[in-house]
Image 1: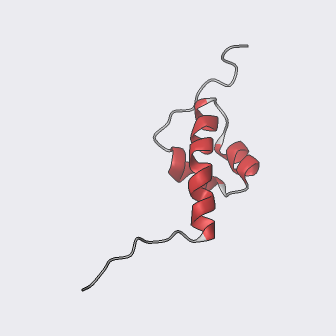
Image 2 (image 1 turned 60 degrees about the vertical axis):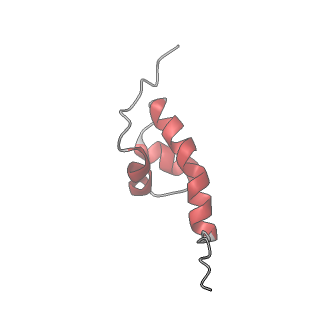
Length: 63
């Protein structure tokens, strides 16, 4: 009998998985990739892969 184990995320990947929804929300609010990366402690190219399908929002909306 061969049982398949569910893959386990490494601590680094698990941390990034938790940050992705936060990065997507920041992008909707209009923050730049660099601003999001600095706030979350990840490189802006990582942020880009998470949010490339989201157009930048208007940071001044609602003021």
